[in-house]
Image 1 (cartoon, rainbow, N blue to C red):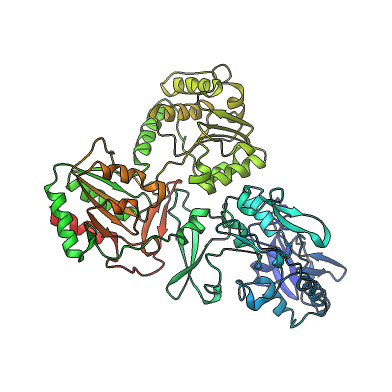
Image 2: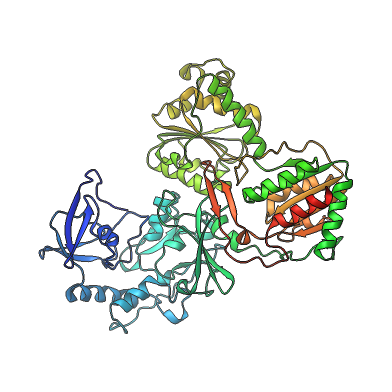
Amino acid sequence: MSNATNADVDSVTLTIDGQEVQAAAGETILEAADRAGIDIPTLCAHADLANVGACRMCLVDIDGERRETACTTAVDEGMAVDFDSEELWEKRRSILELQFTEENHYCMYCEMEGDCELEDMFNRAGLDKDRFPLEYKDIEPDTSNEYITMDLDRCISCGRCVRTCEEVVGNDTLNFGNRGKDTTIIADSGVPLGESSCTSCGGCVQACPTGSLYSPLSAYKGRERDCEVETTTCSECSVGCEMEVYTNSGRIVKIEGVKGGADGSQLCEMGRFELLDDRRDRITEPEIDGETVDLDTAIETASAELADANSINAVASDRLPTETLDAFADAMDDLDADLEIPGAARRATEATIREELAADGHEDLPADSVEDILEAEGIVVYDTSIVDTHPVAASYVRRAATDGAELVTVDGDEDRLKRFSDESLTVGSPLAQATAEAAGAVADGGSASPVAGVAEAATRTLDAEDSVVVLGPEIEDTEALVDAYGLAAMTESEVVSLDRGANRADFTADGIDEASEVAYLLAAADRGEDLDRAIEVARGADTVIVQATRESALTQIADVVLPAVDWFEREGTIVDADNEERAVEQVLDPRGEIDDDREIIAELQEVAA
């Protein structure tokens, strides 16, 4: 991320170590070199972060007269840059030797050996030993966070983790503590990471150039250079982050965000870590009443139950690709089953509200992108549980608020964004009630004066030139949705809707009203609270058929258990919160009896028919 201005987009010509380079005015020397394929050494620079020139590795001589850091110096017409002279490398060697002197850099024992940028720089500089006596600080690693270990004996104070937490995640958990040679990274006011405000997104782990921050889930599983990498889409929520999945010898080593873009290679705890940490037993063979059977027998039994049932309720995981959900919806339609997919009912309600508001002249309410939050000057968030359910979207809210956007949060329980909010309201408070009444009047085709009908804080926030209303997944009541959209219409704001569905493709799923004889639950790899609704439906049925990837409380009450492929074995597409179709790529070959969930769905549909 350049520190220089981009106001002037004219091209300039400079030379870097004798090679002529074309660069855009305002670019830094380091950016121009990167685009030209010239590798100026650096340890603190990062494509997603502001440049600070902390490591001094990118020192360059300019026009033979002055010495600057390439990451913080803008290009200029006719500039002559030298970075590869012996004198500059001697400076770098001295800095590197001091780095190795102060910390615990024993590469053969480090989980980052082979992937460490400091180790690479040491080798590139031609160093094979340290001239200075070692000063071993013996700092105890912080293992209080389940997914992130802080081993500050290996920290070089580059500040990448601090800048990632501030600039990308917007959480400001990490910072520098102490001064001079005692400078260290601290969480909040110096508490253990696991007791801090850390969201466990792992952005700091990906940004760290050494083994100072790492995940025990990935330690010693394989070097990056020995891995295959597949880029796919995370389907843990509807934000649809791109992720790079590293595999080695048929197993997943780690998951990282893709560099660049508004999310700054960001993932959340669910996408980066929880997908790697599902320790439930895998279902590879079908079961009937707890006994293992062959697949044909299980399909015949399940098909007979479906064919003979007078009523069928079906629930499908919203994390599945559109192609799988379409096939499941089609099969359930043939069986005259009532189908429920998380988020589908709310999306249908919102579509009706938008149509009615559009008829009254309030068009273009949905935001073009979740990333529009970053540019907003005023934000109202209804339901701050997005911090847990849509963490990357919540990071956009935090970043916008930190950059000066006015933020009002409305929640019935704990306000998860209160630290960043200008006004924190409780559902049912006078302000929230006044907002609802005025917004409801607009949604019902009437009108309301923003000043007279709504309390001052909400109108001040949404009267900004660019304003956004963010709806979290707990907002499911029709009246509440009408109020929220009415508020957006009244203030000419955009709406970012973040419902429970990870895949927001258009499905016909009218929901479930009453218990049934048979329940068919396509749970896939759902876990924890995501299984609650399926379990509720299962308990109301006489016969329960579950198609799942792993054992759970749901499979324990199933009469028939059918296997499903795991998230890394699927391929297809999903529709994200921006209504963009995103590719889900297969990372590893399926390990069970089936290659695709649709195989079983199709056979059940055919036999039952």
